[in-house]
Length: 57
Image (cartoon, rainbow, N blue to C red):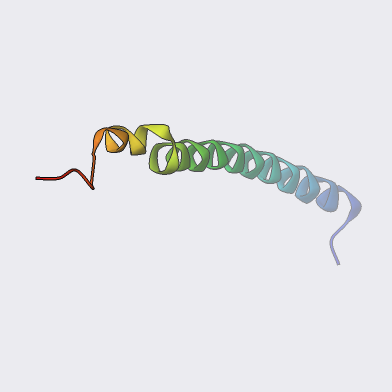
């Protein structure tokens, strides 16, 4: 069974790893939001309102 000092050290390492993963998660969430805006935002529909699909030829 680990000693108290060992448990404290393990806990510190786990807290650092958790903090790093939280930062990575925040970055990835920002990237997903950016990509969703690019895919589904107004820019993706640019030019479509200028098409008249029912225009007589």
